[in-house]
Amino acid sequence: MSTPTEPSFRESVDMMFNRAVALMDLPPGLEEKIRVCNATYTVRFGVRLRGGMQTFTGYRSVHSEHMEPVKGGIRFSLGVNQDEVEALAALMTYKCSLVEAPFGGSKGGLCIDPREYDDHELELITRRFAYELIKRDMINPAQNVPAPDMGTGEREMAWIADQYKRMNTTDINGVACVTGKPTNAGGIQGRTEATGRGVQYGLQEFFRDSRGLQKAGMTGTLDGKTVVVQGLGNVGYHAAKFLSEEDGCKIVGIIERDGALTDENGLNVEAVRSWIASHGGVRGYPDGTYVEDGAAVLETDCDILVPAALEGVINLSNADRIKAPLIMEAANGPVTAGADNILREKGTVIIPDMYANAGGVTVSYFEWVKNLSHIRFGRMQRRQEEARHQLVVDELERLSHHLGDKWSMTPDFKEKYLRGAGELELVRSGLDDTMRAAYQAMAAVWHERDDVDDLRTAAYLVAIEKVAASYRAKGL
Ligand code: NAD
Image (tube, rainbow, N blue to C red; front, side, top):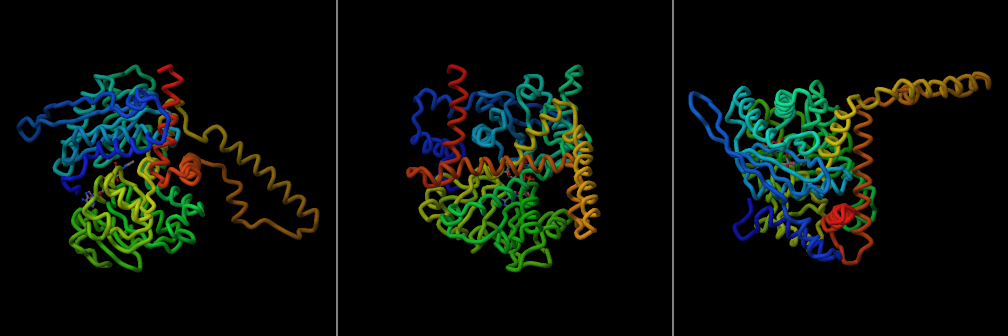
């Protein structure tokens, strides 16, 4: 956790913003307009539970409405407070801008430990929170569209969508009021894995950037790289799974709430995940070394550190002991502004949160578009695409036959070539394209400007410039 001498999360985000705008030529008024959070709504509501009334406190913060709807997750955690929600809403503005998702930034949170309530109780609480936000248009397909975040997932999003539909029975676009829904309730394939998948695609793109690799003092590909992941939740689990199963990375450390597991030969992510599901934590897992002081494992000698749990975990108290040359900020705000300065001076390359975890909002954007168009991606063109490919294959086979069957296509090639893209393939393709393009925009600034020596400042510059252009176009 952050030491008391460190700025708050929101102040940290502001400091990083200020470092970037100092390199820009924005009128001071516009700079201030972009930086400040437009509005934060606090709600306290009661729910009748266990024979009594319990009061809950929730927030929905709107950072910037330069584009609408505004977008950002809803977090269920005891750590939720106004400062945190505002910091996260600001990051959403910059994140959406960087990956060109046409939204302003928002975030919500409810002060609650979801593990203390059963499913029915959580449904009552979630629906009541949603009711409070919906009746003030703080959940609305045209104005404010939440998504999952820490402590929430597709189940909560389905409850919110249903609550909205009950209160807006004639809104034909009602299901677009929230993203991250299950596929049988208006969701899109690939959304649950999207943030972790984006972490994978982002790292793949970094490893294609020879100048970036050189700055990190790294060589080669992802294959064989050692990785430590903090938080095996939605984001951390999917990132660790894809990196180990598809890219050949070795997950040498997994840090959870109750400690950490290490194994220099690589941990089995699936096995650890199911152990946590049945035992409530990593303690006792048989195929690894258990370390009680989980945070100490952040300091392991590894190639890539992936903090994917919560903010402020790399701070003034441990930054100088972090050994990984590359940090992929899968969580929001895992590195404080003070730690960022220390790491930058050490030459550690940090791939910043606004980019690293943008896969979630990117696929949320696809889900929202799908909901508004009322048709699944690929439905119209898939079979037509397959028929055209079949024409090519038939013609090549005919020619081959004509030439005396001297060559033939491998069955594997034929099968892959003939298969038209379904929704999941299209979602992954759109996400990969987005992560590549956003990385290249950031990296161009990082490599080409002498006054920019880190990816975070580069990301802020790209993002703020687009928000500023949008305000200018409106005549503000
Ligand atoms: P989650 O609730 O699914 O998982 C969080 C994980 O972190 C859990 O496994 C939890 O046990 C673990 N954890 C909590 N406290 C810990 C601690 N002190 N030390 C180690 N582990 C701890 O949450 P998530 O959706 O995976 O979100 C994680 C981070 O990613 C958050 O910062 C969130 O804002 C960010 N994020 C999430 C999404 C998304 O699509 N879910 C999108 C963008 C960013």
